[in-house]
Image 1 (cartoon, helix red, strand yellow):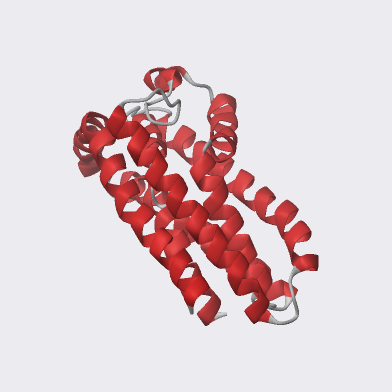
Image 2 (tube, one colour; image 1 turned 45 degrees about the horizontal axis):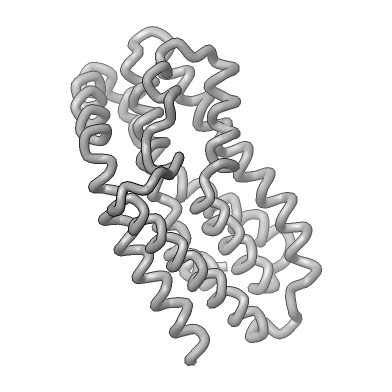
Length: 224
């Protein structure tokens, strides 16, 4: 199990590229009355979709996994290469300022305060579905776990660990709000403002770094 989690590390790191999801969490937390509850519900929505993706695509991919785990390596390498190209292409689009709905904060990001708990949960469920980058990360993780040929309970545990780790940067501000409510107020204000102002630059830098890294990993997998 440990080796499989290590193999998932690049995908976990890539999945942490969730600038707008973090912004939404922070905007929810700015509401001193109902914000914490909405942030938690929003996070549960994201987690629910990710778990459902694991169940559905895990059932599809597991039967096709080869009993020889080495045969799964080209598939993983291809996924990493595709992911790298996808991220580099996205970085190029942002730099060239080509229209792309995922590059700019969605329209509803400015109306988060008025969202009901039900809308917060629905929004959380929708985000992993409309974010094409996260689809590749998730499918890559499921494929890696499937080709590791782990026992079913272990595979489920590994995927749950993967899901928990990729949500780390969304969980941290919620924990901060719970444990240090007074300090959290100013931190949330400053962080959300800074992220909104610099989200484009952050995305470009992160996409380029991971795009090059995953492309290299994918190509190396074919050559080794």
